[in-house]
Length: 308
Image (cartoon, rainbow, N blue to C red; front, side, top):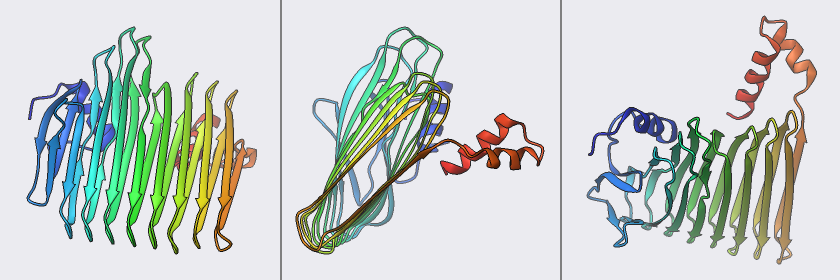
């Protein structure tokens, strides 16, 4: 693997918790170039001919293996679109780590748009973690627009953790899923915006198979003058169950818009949406201040606990 500088190493730690070359299959992309790649006997990583992404093939019944595909940008002005397709074989059980970190110390905007498509075979299980992080003191923006498509066959399972806590100026996250009979999808989004940042999350889940289920939950904090929009739509096209939830803390001059969308096209489709937006309760802050914390420290403790 190509030696990375300290900024690139820090970004990898933030988005993929990598302190060294990971075990198992991996592809590490830095400033629009692959700087390290490895496949295993059961997981093959194939670069696209145009250099703008990967095809990842996971053999049926692969167990207890992982794939790491983080991206880091440390040069100002880079704008790229990357397409990664995952084919998860029947009965497999794998852990996939993605995410992107941008350090922009220049005056030009830096942007990474990652398009991930998952084709999950019958009875397969996938746990997916995607973290976004921004840093740098330049005037150029840090822009991330992830697109995710999930196609789930019978009795498959997918758990997705979407995290963006710091430093991303603009993001539009679009996630679409189609679930067959008995398929189960769980999404947990954690998001914090500050300054003048904007974050839009759009989820659309088609529950097409009998006994399919989806649980989409977002926890977020909007600080300063930032803006967030959570737009979640569930379409119950069979006897299924679906739940969406937006639980948010608003601070300073922040703004949050929650848009529920439930469409039942079957008499046995059970769909629920919940939303709660409010400020931090004063009695919580006072209680922590009696333990010796300043008001600011108390707020940070509450926010950290809320976003865990």
